[in-house]
Image 1 (cartoon, rainbow, N blue to C red):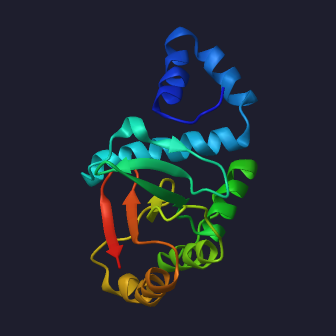
Image 2 (cartoon, one colour; image 1 turned 90 degrees about the vertical axis):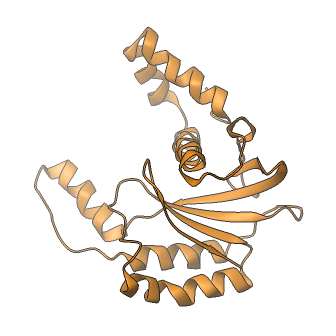
Image 3 (tube, rainbow, N blue to C red; image 1 turned 180 degrees about the vertical axis):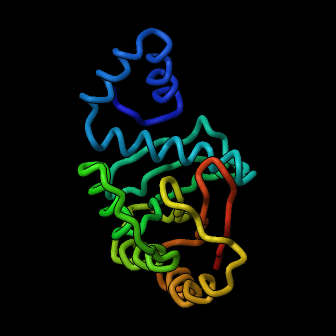
Length: 188
């Protein structure tokens, strides 16, 4: 099963109504690219609801590199979105280790560092957009999001955001808490 759009997600979700075992089997044989597309498409569709942007969800289509992750229609014009999950790598590593050992491995994590790391990574990539505008959607899925009023985190991000918007391919950057709210929008 290839996950490319909302109807593919609906077909996958309908499997659970017939047989949880069948859905589990599909998930196990699904490629890692399709699992990634499925996660990103779910995040994107929830983001569309939370953001209030005039995006027709049925136009969302997952793409492969060198294109950005999703192409859709925003206010009836084509628009691309590149997505990235915000996760502190040290926290993710400790979490993974905890799952293996069943021991709690706590510790601190950074709110600003994962965001600036994503900016650096995404700034180095080239996207084929053929002149269509491109936005960057950073989302929190597993890690707790930062407080959008936290001036310390915002001041740490300011230089990276400004640099990304001025010299990078992105016209807007959204920071989104999955199934929650849009925390921040930055634009040129």
